[in-house]
Length: 312
Image (cartoon, rainbow, N blue to C red; front, side, top):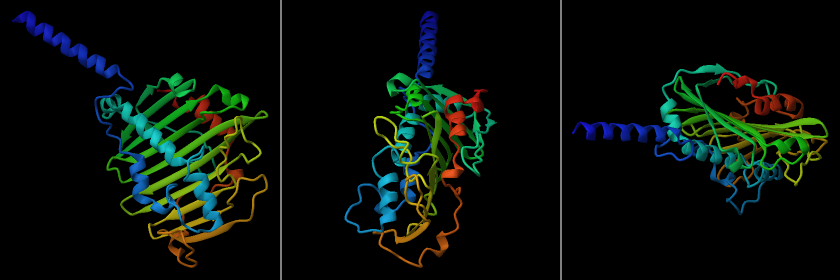
């Protein structure tokens, strides 16, 4: 009987130890809420790439084609990838959720950027399986929010071949799963210069408010081999919707010579023009981003050098 007891105990402990060591084959459910669910809960369906049949303002078409449709600047695709990554790391996240956090402050990748993160744990991802050479996920929970930093580096970004991209996704997600703030930061190198695209996303599915701001220090002449262009709406655009109307303002282009600022107000149901209806949406809580606001050097420091998380 004693031998059977000790054998059972050893097997139980061994199984538990093996389970904790599995980084990407989880039997648990991640306690971190889905970012895609929060975003979709606040976004009008008319902005989704699958929505067709609308005749809309050309500036909204540019915004939708660059940020809401499949391609290198599709922010929803990146949120989906992070959600899936966190699901695969569920065991490690559950184990870490009560750990004490420390404050880690990333470099200022754009004017006004201030996003201190409360982190406690780090997981190394199989980078080779993702086509990159370094892939780590950092996370922690504090004050009713989860903080997640996913950083991936592709060595080829130094030689103008950045597929998949070298980029970071920094997230603050409420435990309740109703709100989030996310930064997606890509970095590339062309002719000895570091370029970055910064996209900020804020969503609250309870209030139905969604905000987005994006710009790039690159323009459409910094296209990297094999042809992907991560400059998005590079000159700088901000968007806000409350579920009834969609308001957007900025320079809707990524050309080397930015056009004049334009504004758009549309009905959220079909994106038809709604001039004069967006007065309540013109006050934005996102960064004011334009090409001069984004720092490629600081983006490289955040994503590649990572000295700001050296304590983990």
